[in-house]
Image 1 (cartoon, rainbow, N blue to C red):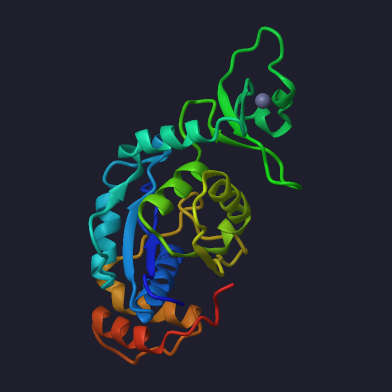
Image 2: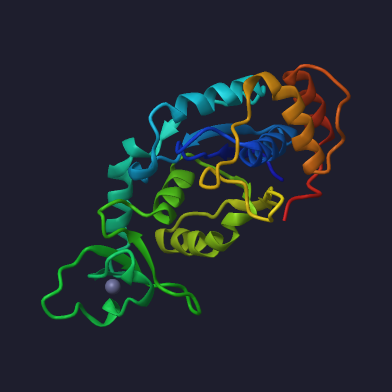
Length: 254
Ligand SMILES: [Zn+2]
């Protein structure tokens, strides 16, 4: 790990952080701080249909309560659409218009031309060799997550992305977009996802409970245990994190 480490945590404000998202936040925080790096927070609110009013504020309160102090201003994607538009334009020549609804996009044939009488709705980009084409602007007009996250990571100078292994599948597509846009790819590290007793990933969709501010110290110790780090006996969240920063090792990063 060289100089100029800048990491980030990028929750979507579709609900409060649960234990699984705290684990990811802690891993990215510790990896950044252990390497003397910066740690930014970005709200991934590109999918406005999933944004829940008040969730972004709650997430920041949860991070504060857990001692996860970020650098700089919190950036939201909803304010950055001109940047995504510009990137979309720069991809011209690698993209085509697509007439499929979101549901139809899985069997899209629009690369060969739009079916007669069908209107362009989405924009798709040619995949890398061996990779399927994928949508970068959705049929509903919203920029796709893959494009937004690539532009944001570049614009914010992110050097290291530590995130959940559920996003492992996204990494090749993001690296491909970085290649097409002439961006340097950050280093990607993935953390195992926390699952419920039925083996499902903890998520807002399956009603994982919020990480309560008043239990922050205990939640941090459990997160460190999950990440196979030494677990401090006691202390306030900041003290626990200070020790964890010093001891951090990447054993559970994929
Ligand atoms: Zn299509």
